[in-house]
Length: 149
Ligand SMILES: Nc1ncnc2c1ncn2[C@@H]1O[C@H](COP(=O)(O)OP(=O)(O)O)[C@@H](O)[C@H]1O
Ligand SMILES: [Mg+2]
Picture (cartoon, rainbow, N blue to C red):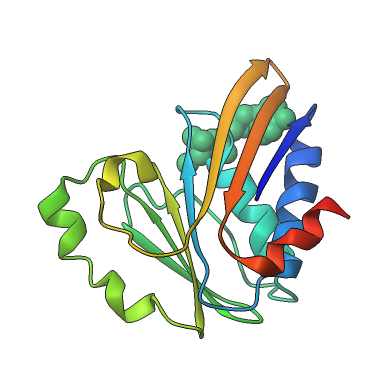
């Protein structure tokens, strides 16, 4: 299934993320692509907000920490592959998080090569203006079909 959105402010992107977060049931691998400043981290913040109360959570770019973990309704693993090569990606131990108790969110997923196998939620974000973004979602996860409603 494919869904296409245009958001016209950071708040709208946060709200779309929160809707996505509310539909996740565990096991999803969310692959975010798009250039610097596209809104990958902001969409992630929305997704985490949509996963239930976790007031301590501060979603920040994991460019320097490599891996952020947020404990919400499900544990959310947030990584950014921007500075990593394929060997480093393979050594992050991500296999441990690819199960139904976790949601994995990957920024700069286009750098992952073929690392993520099986069903994924692919989200491509592109600039459509200073405050506008096109957000294209392709998903093999049936739960997210409610997005169209
Ligand atoms: N419609 C929009 N959606 C998302 N971000 C937007 C939008 N309009 C402006 N922005 C700005 O773009 C930037 C996106 O930053 P960020 O989420 O860190 O991008 P990335 O993680 O893709 O590098 C933020 O400064 C945000 O305020
Ligand atoms: Mg980012």
